[in-house]
Length: 273
Image (cartoon, rainbow, N blue to C red; front, side):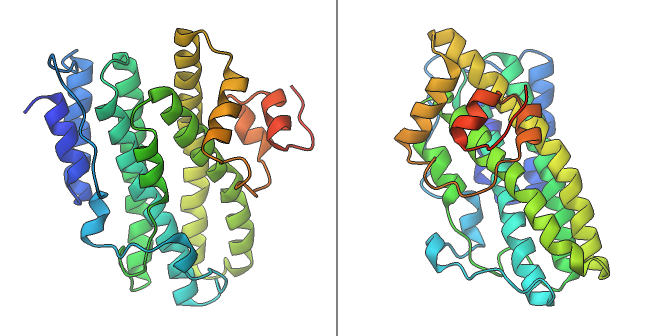
């Protein structure tokens, strides 16, 4: 099985341990320079995500609100939504590896590292969810990140702008807010474990966004495009700026590569270079 056949297999399987094994093997391909696509290779478009085998998919508006973190079910619903994001993030990273064979080997290496991180994040949160008596798939989910990948499947520049630089960067904004809401309940062991996992994920996601920022700027340079205005145009094309109501996490976004001028344009009240 060659590099791209294995990457496709990893994307199609719903078994996270199989994905993890494939990621390790794909990394070895990269390290030995055997990650080039055969002539005529065309990445396939997937009609459904791999989690469709065990998750009930609903429109976002049909997802119940998550409010009661002081109950086991309320905490489980919150945790399930984050587990779903982490599972989706595994496939997003793998899809970047699989879908853009003309990018340098370093690109595939970076996103395989991200995929491996996301597997570890998923396992941590899944184990806590199961300790509460629930499993991934017990609550409905939506297709948001799968749709984002599908809509940007034809252009690596748009993929880097929309997925790491928008959605994952928005995660940097939201993560501290979730932790603040959970801290009043940290006397419960499960909540303390969730907070520990979220803190680790938060630190590592900054590096994931930074990698997306690097490759976004790489693509802009290749095409002779100015990054800030290009990013703004892509967000407007997908109507993403008006849908983001989060308070920007300026320090985290700066650490991930955003400039103050970009952050002010996105709505930051203050920013120091």
